[in-house]
Image 1 (cartoon, rainbow, N blue to C red):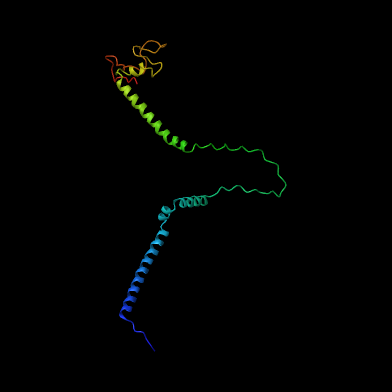
Image 2: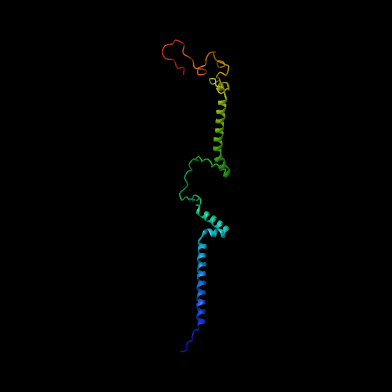
Amino acid sequence: MATAKSTPTDINEIQRRMAQIRRELHEDVRGAVQGAQELTDWRSQVRKHPWLALGTAAVLGYLIVPKRHASPTIVALTPPQPTPPPMIEPAPRKKRWGLIGSAVGLIAPIAVRAAQNYAIQYLEQWIAAQPSGGGAGLLGAGLFPGAPTAGQSHAPGSPPGPSPGFGPRPTPPPGSAGRPRDPW
């Protein structure tokens, strides 16, 4: 039997070739792992194929949302019954305004509240600017119709004299015994 003797250069060549194969195998495995990770990462798929991802999401949304079922048609096998009197139909559903109606619905209460706050501040400033004098500022401005205005001692069409509830409080007559009367 004849055996071929291996020379040291052949052994070195085989070892070099085996090291190269191991390195290529390691790089191939690393590339396969990265490819598998990219395939399972949905974010990278959306980045690579945005239109396909959008279409897929739309189809899935369409399939997930339940469909409206029409009432089934029933075939009557019995003779027709007399028709009952017509029932009152419910009022038709109001049309929705969509996005604009939603925006108005959100903004309207805020605007009403702002208008109320503005009116309250205006009235408070106006009342503070009025001269104090037993409420003559409010009465003279006509806020209470039929009440005496500034300079009047009675309402028009009423007998002269003090009006009950308006003006300064009456003082008890001098020398009256007991506790003072409360006119209110």
